[in-house]
Length: 202
Image 1 (tube, rainbow, N blue to C red):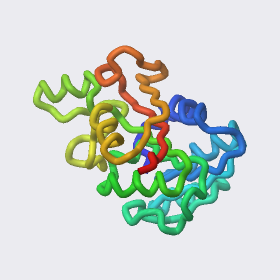
Image 2 (image 1 turned 45 degrees about the horizontal axis):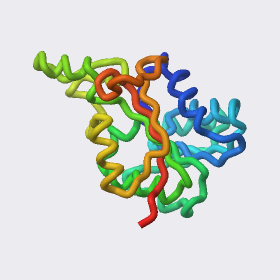
Image 3 (image 1 turned 180 degrees about the vertical axis):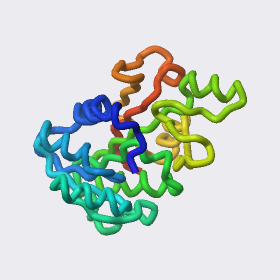
């Protein structure tokens, strides 16, 4: 359930690893073949677990010696105790979730912190394609409208408004375009968004 072309994996992984402390317990939701967990194990010496629904991905994780559980994220994370992980990661899977509120709520329950990454639908190339009358297709959104797994695309502004409405505190954000961090007008020029989050009390 990690919907990003393979050539972009290293930049994605590096940005996430920057926020992970050494030796942490990490849960990767929609872990795919377990490549992110492998990378974090090598670079941050984490204790990692993955969750994925796809049979082929489960087999790949086992072959890669990744601790993995087969499960449907739409049904929540009830098998995990509250605050049982230092970080819960949802990397480029948010847009494919039907129950967006439910999965973020569960992430905040299970993890002390959450890390979410997603393609920014507000990127100027997406806006231009829509203005030309077409649904966007790009490196971060590589699917045609008729075969896309994405059901809830959003912009940076949309996501930050959501966090504010659901008592989720944004600790840090990093907006990227390929391997460059975007500072100026990130909702216009940023292609990929990274957020580090925690649950607000009250």
